[in-house]
Image (tube, rainbow, N blue to C red; front, side):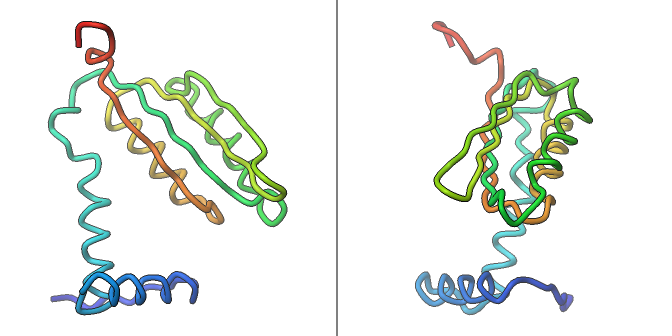
Length: 139
C-alpha cells in the first residue's frame, strides 16, 4: 500500500481523529481511505450516465474572510451552459449561501461540483442530482 502525505488544517485532522475513535476505525488513514472511495464513487453511478440531469448545489462560506463569492461568480459565468439559476443569500452574521440549479449531463455536473469543492475556504458543499425523466407525476 502506498504511503501518501497530505496537508490539512489541524481542526480537520482533530475531527477525523475523533470520528475514527467514536466510530471504531483503526485510525485516521482508514477514515481518509473510506472518504476518498466515497468521493470517487459519487459520480460513477451508471444509472445517471447518458441522461439529462438536474442538480442543486449549495455552498456555504464566510464572506468576511474569503473571496469565495467572487470565485462562485466566475464559476457561474464559465459554466453558463449548465447553470439554469443561481441564488445568493446571507446566513447569520458572517456567512453566505450560494445555490446553483444545474441542467446537464453527469460529466459536466460532476466537473462543476468538483471545481466548487476545490475552491479554497468553502465551509460546506452539498448537492443532489435527479434525472429529468424521473420528474413528474408519473415517475
